[in-house]
Length: 153
Image (cartoon, rainbow, N blue to C red; front, side, top):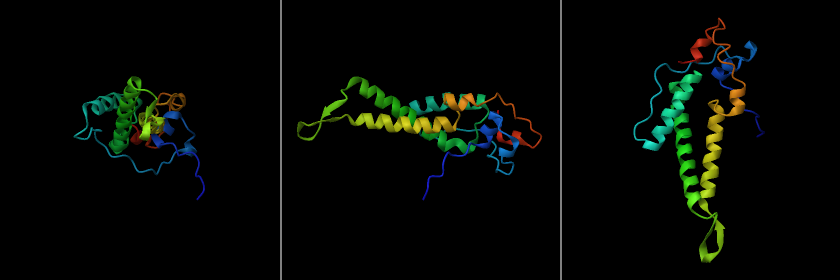
């Protein structure tokens, strides 16, 4: 199986970025209406990241209920990255492993993996500088084709 290439940009971001009308899928199923709420049972740290991130998504006009689980994964990855970074700040990069051999601290892999998840979701949500550089403050919010259905807020 070959590599598909770059993932398609969500319609809401295409509208915010001002993409050509021919690149907008007018037949995309709309995201469900209603508030985006944090699932029960998350830690206080995850909830703090959730609230902060959701505030930003609302300001950007791209938060929908359908994003709940992706947003939760992003928030959990941020917390995991923070914990691994805090652990690494207090411990050496190389530790004694089996039979006293120096090995790389496993927290490095945890930090790296969490950072990869954060980067992937951050780009998807428009939280990276490159993703934001394409956004033009809602230039295409009212294109006469019902595009407002993709935007919240």
